[in-house]
Length: 416
Image (cartoon, rainbow, N blue to C red):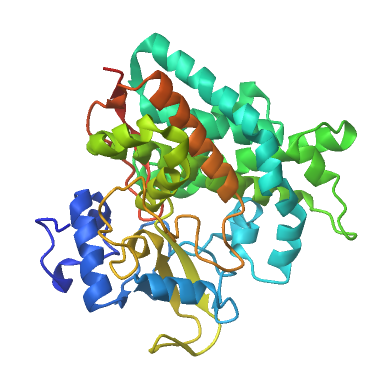
């Protein structure tokens, strides 16, 4: 796919905000050019008023290179942060999660929390996920149409994550609004540029405060929720500190809420744009459920990139990096790599194999919540295709202006 706005390397600047506001086809065309002509290209640091200028970054756009870097944490570290900007010191409590760590600290935290995200645990959650999905579609059928993002795609993962953590329903909207602020940085609907640092840090502090209160309650009166299990867990003598719990909840909201919402939103858009694939999946839902879900995640690529920082002078497939160099691993581009995926721009609910990187690449930081996300995407489309078969996007998506999250803020839908 080639957009009219991209003709060659000289047109591409991933550090400019305008690139991420350009038509979707132009973005796809740009990454196609980069994969072919400059698969590891250097770009200036994005400039924003609230962050100090950085040294720039290398954009890693080919599938093989993204996978290779992910498998070498000894050379390419998470500890300096996973976004292109440096983290302000004030943000450490909420953002210093295990996604920003290397082993052995990362392994310790992952060992404690991973027991909540095994396939068997998600299987036990499956009934509740299906129930919430059914309730959402009940409401949708009564209205006959809605903003699909806020009323469907956001509601399912938010409800499940909050219930898992034991967050009372009265606080669900509080969580959603503050998560939108944190992950919507750069989009004026959520964070006006002049107020970004204060707005984001305030939202993070408020969420961290809520988690501290919840944790204190569960220490005194434990329940059957994930917060109770985590604050009272003692695995080989190890427990989560209050700060670790707060930062874990932060990454859980991002990885388990916003990214699943993004996948579901893109799912409706893809099914609307490809009615033949919608008919095929609806005609035999269970047969194609697994492959269709993976294909939605591949093309949605909810997290556009993750950053790594070179720990020493090293090479990656012939390219030399110096200690301290920033690499942005572009999953969005890797998931469209022509050397891995046949006709990568085609939406194919039968695609198999489908070794996409929508949950990250193989390595120590592969997404803990992948099983949960798959279950939620499958559940919502099972209900929609069975009970609201005419559902379709009724207008253009209002996309999040972000170079990190491939989000859709609003998407009108209709049932007929």
